Image (cartoon, rainbow, N blue to C red; front, side, top):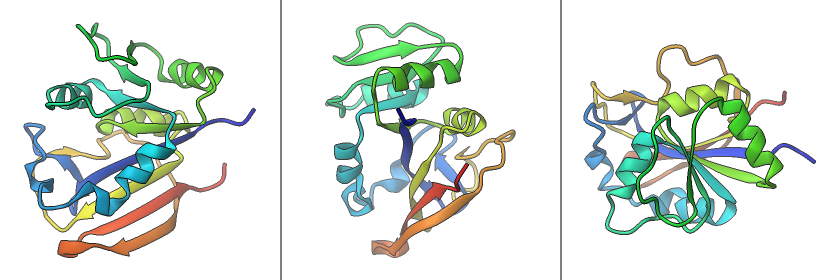
Length: 175
C-alpha cells in the first residue's frame, strides 16, 4: 500500500499571510474559490485534516462545508461536532499513520501554519496548491511560521487569474 497524498489548497497574500492577525480573511472576498479549482479539489479528496482555529472559523459558517470525514487536530474536546467530524490530539505522525491505515488515499489539508509546519516536519505535505492574491497584508498569520523545516517543491502548474491573482500548484520533490 502506498502512502496517501496530502494536498493543501489555500489562499495567501503576496507577503505569505493566510489571514489577518485577527484570523479574518475578508481580503479574499473579491476572489472566487471556484476560479482556483476548489470544487475539483473537494471532489478529489477522501478526508480533511484541519487545525482547531480553521475548524472554529468553518463551524461558524451558516452551513458546514464538508460532506467527507474531517479530523480536527486539537488538544481540546469538540462540543457537538457536525457529522463525520472527529477530534484528534497527540502526535501528528500517529494521526497520519491512522488515516493511512483507514485507507484514505488523498487527504485535504485545511489549517494554519502550525499544522502545515507539522506536516512538513514529518514529510507528509505532498501538494501545495495556492491562490496567490496580489495584496500585501503586512501583519497577519503566516503560511510558514518560524521553525518550518526546509521543503523542496517543483512547480506543476501556474495560471494567471482575475484581479492579478495567480493559481499555482507545487509538488514535493521526490523523496
